[in-house]
Every structure is written in structure tokens, then in C-alpha cells.
Length: 79
Image (cartoon, rainbow, N blue to C red; front, side, top):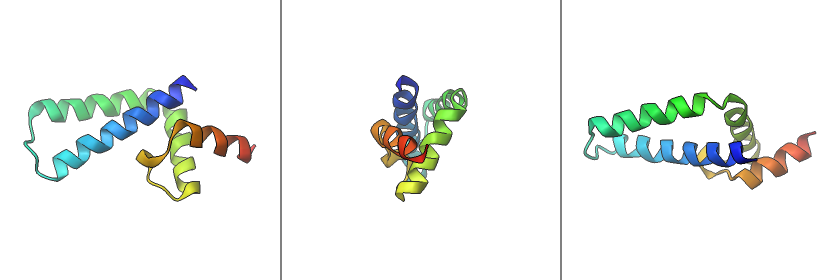
């Protein structure tokens, strides 16, 4: 479950960075690098990202509003 916990945290951080960039906050090269780094780290865990996205869709929430506990509960119900 550590991978799911880490991936949930990464998705939340990615969302924060994207909102900062969209809201026109001081867009710095560091913020853009952080976002790219976040995306690379998420790409390293495709199964965890998929599980989180499926859980979010099933619970009708945004992916950043899903917890690792939600993923565990939903995946155990599915199978």
C-alpha cells in the first residue's frame, strides 16, 4: 500500500502545482521543473495511478480527493 500512499501524495502535489500555474501565480522555471518531475514520478507507478483514477471515477470524486484507504476499500469491493 506504500505505493498507493506515495502516488496519492504525488497526485495531490501535481494538482497543487497545476492550479498555481493556471491561476497565474509567479510561474517560475522551478515550478515547471517540479511539475515535470511530478509527472515523471507518477509515470513510474502506472498501476497505482490507474487504481486511483478508477476509484475516483467510481466514487465520483476528483483524483486528488481520493485517499489510499478509498483505493483499498474500492478495490477489495471490486474483486
